[in-house]
Image 1 (tube, rainbow, N blue to C red):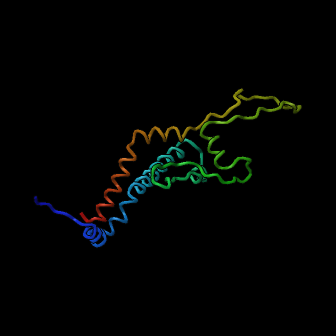
Image 2 (cartoon, rainbow, N blue to C red):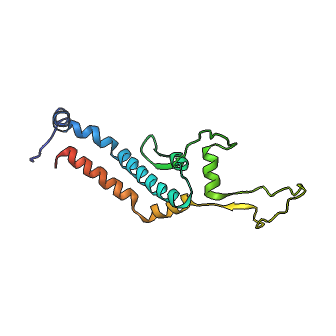
Image 3 (cartoon, rainbow, N blue to C red):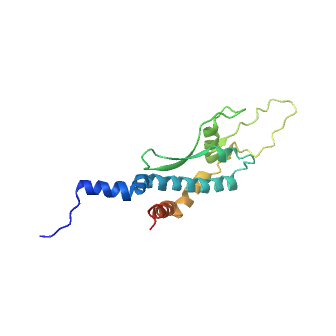
Length: 160
């Protein structure tokens, strides 16, 4: 019976000498793909915020944080929680109010010369930039493109 066999010594020598640079890159391939996906999702979300919110100074865009799970199992974009000057809400609360809408205080009507001439609406409708970004991401094959980008990086590391 003929066979070719690699002992553990040969196997370790093979990986340590010939492919050491690859063994460092491959364990993080999934994490790299998810990081690329998170950045792609953030770009789409930034576009939706730009279209739907009057954000002249870029506050709402700056509050969005793309992140990846510690094991590389998920990617997400969510608002950070930081205090906002002259507001009782933090940045996460303001983002939530912009996304889903919020109520408006009606005037008290106690002033002598005041006449209410409003529309009668006591809420501001939400801008739904997260909702539209989610649908765009679902239709856009984001994860596949991010994985392809990582494969190209690995090809360059392997010099194939």
